[in-house]
Image (cartoon, rainbow, N blue to C red; front, side, top):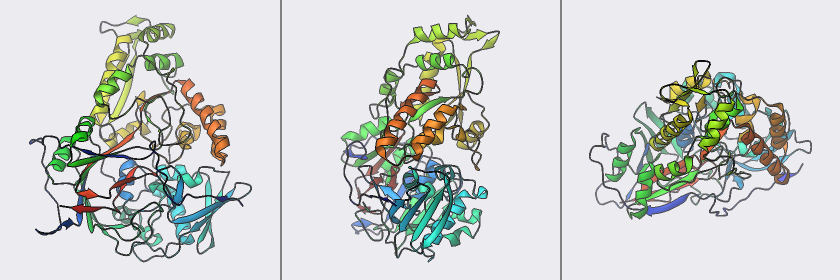
Length: 557
């Protein structure tokens, strides 16, 4: 049974490391502040505060248990109290966390995972092999309504406790991405006793082994996290190996970008996320604030086309739509140089990402010729093409919780250039819940659906035909609707390989095959973008997903 070699020390890499830099404060917007300060559990004269205030612009989770559903807002806050079996270091290598090692059976049909000893959940329940078994059963229970986690562990049939500190994952087929899948908050470990309280209660305050504990949750306002004084299970790359220096975190929901920015500038909050590109760029010259960015692992921010109905059931029309987009100058201007255009399906923070710069270009003449070829030859008075009296419309729902204003502006420019060749792109700005409904019922022609996973196996999750039926949560990961047995076989073969020398070329072939379908148009890396006061020291983005960790943080005055 060969053992997986785990890295125990970080190996800095410019490609993966979250960029942290000092910046200059922007002029505060007086109109923006509409929140109540919830600062500082300190008294005058103290030199260090022990309460940090974090303001998020992402959607408020409907459940704090990251097994339920499984979206980005759950990972952001969940990383403070739920820990995973593995993590990654700055060099992208898998490192120990709640597990200490892993070995794969010769036939690839099971993995034995050695567990850290002496760890307990914050309710006193021991973390052991039985707890791992209970977590996987909870995640795979249809009543949990998981999507991200259950899809990541789709090949796991069961977990058995070999002994107190060894959990055996038995598989339906080899899974070379299993350890990467276990390095995510959505497959993190929670107290089995917490599960016994029922899903609703566990959603309110999941019980993990992390450096903080959920004390309370005030919907549409904030979550209060308090320090786990007994904490002793940091990932291998953490500087602090004991309890957090902070005593409390106030996790506040401030959806308006200007309000978050002003709250940071006025000192009402210490850290903000979803920072707008112009603000992020302006922070670059200020000594009072720092920024941290990270390319979320998984697929890039991309437009996906629904191939199950007109107009994008026709590959010729898909190609014409892609050629109608003048993306390079639009991205340069709207994102103020804070990110680069991508022509890759995989995030730059994952191995094996392949780029296709010659395929995703702006060519309106070719787009017009292709639409003529596809029979969309007539035009209405507004220039929109028609065929047999039907307009060439593109229904494009957009989640305002997932697409920042700069991305919405980019989509408006895409709609404008697409109209020049005859597409009627109808953008609909929706809240996250309504967007999920539209996605789940296939009521769209084009969509942007972020999907993060700490493995190139995300390609199988998102583009294999198994992703077309909905997960227990009702969410389907495959938004293109394309079912291609040859692509499925290629993705299956890649996912079964544990040797990078084998899986790398297979994932390269899979990306080529997906790009040739024309059903995906890459835009840029889906970025984590935060800004924080330089009073905050020791802050970093944990490389397994790029989510913030406050284990090492102190706050000066």
